Image 1 (tube, rainbow, N blue to C red):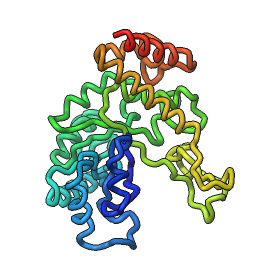
Image 2 (image 1 turned 120 degrees about the horizontal axis):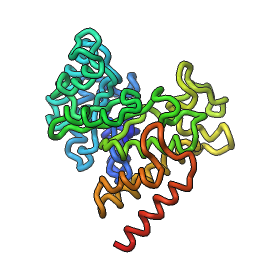
Image 3 (image 1 turned 180 degrees about the vertical axis):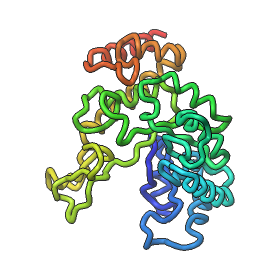
Length: 307
């Protein structure tokens, strides 16, 4: 799972330790200063890249330049910024999230066909193509069409945000526990190489940390919020994890189980196990009980122990 924005500058004393941590799968490098009044200058981008590209963790780095481009102007902006980055680091990775092609330059007769053509339209200015799960709906068979458009060295990631909505897996408040956990099951079955979530503490701003937590207007409750300021509940300044964050962790652990099983018996067998135990068959067909999950984990443990 990707960290959306790096928590420290490239030159910060703690950044090397943080970015090198094996638990961190990926991190976003800011194209501009996160706080505009600090460190602004014409050489900000070059300085960040010059520091990071000498590090072993540079392979984890990516640039997230534009969220969900909708028209030619947006896509051209991605190309312009990406070109500036490649001038400093030809091996840099750019990630683009999208759910459609440019509305003012139809790439194909239908909207879904235009969506499929985005990699061809953006290449070589993006290496990680990150698509909304909302686009797929209940059509898992469309995954093969998305992957078929990729070339060597390119990756396919997915994301959830406002959509998809119930009954599909997501992390909104009010959804069932297994529905939250199923976000990770879906990733495993569909075969994406990464997953992006847009925010973890994006509630409405408050004057003091202990103020009542308010979700952002216009978003489903819980969207972009996975933990809370500890001061709201106790005197502690430690963040308080939501149940949804704990279910996310359980889903990641399920993926580790499935990865172990796949290493012994193959990926197809791991998907067969996911379906056969009734844990997850599709975005509208997954268990609402925990017994099938225990059965799946138990079978993985027993088979891997004896193999």
